Image (cartoon, rainbow, N blue to C red; front, side):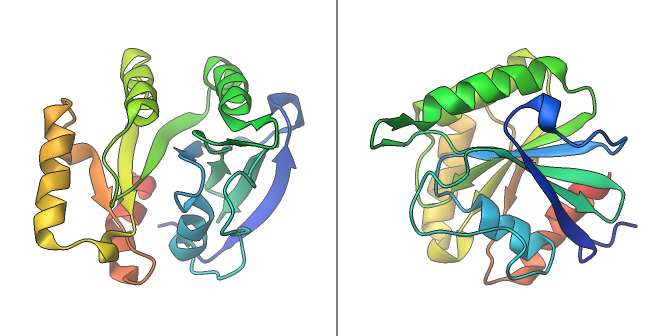
Length: 190
């Protein structure tokens, strides 16, 4: 059993050579910039200020490592789909993730975070296709599910199925509904 409340920030790494050299399995979080990765980490681990949250996109520019109960690392990656002031987050994401996926052997699952109010875009589908091509275990985690009604959730499910994604790989969460995190915690424990 993993005690998610026993989570601490370890370090930020600009590249894999700066990453913690532990033996823990890794769970990578990816998603569009401002999808709520930091909020998800805080809610998952029952800590309000574990991961820095911002209303402005593009703040995560490093790989941020969190030690979960000396059982696994949560690894928060830079977001994709955002460029401002000459800073291309997509380029950073691409370079960092190519290195990560080609060298990390402890990766167990990738959590692809998506805003439940938005349809999958080209970047989202590209990430999912990449993970499938490389046979990397992943789950789609739709955030902000409290902001959609049943009809909108049904439409979202139809959109997911239309691009060939199995609903078994989908988890819906809301930071306002803590019980929605139980399925996610169960997936990570496995």
